[in-house]
Image (tube, rainbow, N blue to C red; front, side, top):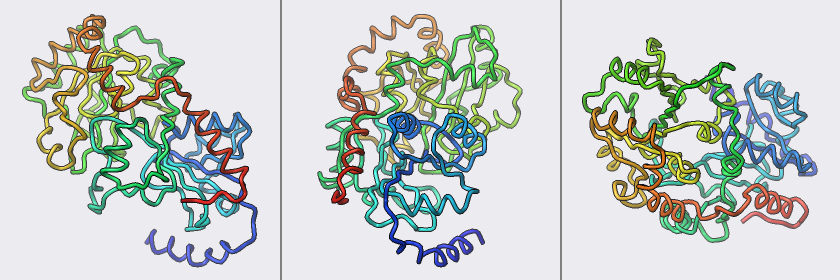
Length: 392
């Protein structure tokens, strides 16, 4: 019913596209309309402070109130008239995911669509959606941002078949946050409570198939024992999902006090990058958080119970086992041993994995001394100021 109604409104609104309006606005959004995070957030705030006419799209009232309080421009989903008006006047659309904002199909065909990107690492970003089985398509963008010459070659050219005219290499605005070491996210997650525990953060990546909480499938893994281990070692174990509707038995029971699910629906301002500055240890499979932790020298442990299936279904840019930035744990015992080893002795990790961390950064983020925000700012300014700038 929703799609039928949307289709009807799209047809009714279509004549509005022919109104002779000046195209002078920019619209940007996160991969989900109910969160305020990642590369789009940091670029949006940077450009806003530079006086750029940019609007953030959201359907979340809490985010809307934050934007209003801070004098940022925004489009709120329930403000139907304003939403149509700003959409019709859009000259540039920016998104962090594989799709872009296009309310009722009112975006001008000549508008410049920019994919800012959302991750760079070992895994292939191009994958099938679980329901539709369709591949992510980046060809609909005019410009797709990459973070290294290696990713341009392996992803942009070899996997996406993009022409060089669509490729830009500006890096990620969120890496500027890593440089500044913002330490505000832990307090936000804990509702303002003080924390003197060690922080472990688990970031399982999205899978192109149905799945439950991956850690539960680790050989001999036991939730009760793990929670006891965390208590005895004065640790919190936080985790997030890359699938908004995935709920595990841990979330439902909520009886493990040291194991905490960060629900983005309840914490719309939660940002992984900011949080990484505050953690002591990252637990990962092949999420691109590994690149960011290599950037700031945070210890990492890799747990991947469904490695073989993931490799068959999606795959990697290069050999996974030879290029991970930490030990690979296939059993609960090795998992606990390595947590104990690196949660208390960070220097041991840094020394052992120094070369692989450096290698990964050279492969996946070779813009360490570049300010990504400024690169985008000057690029966008050029588009806005040149009346005859055409999309490619």
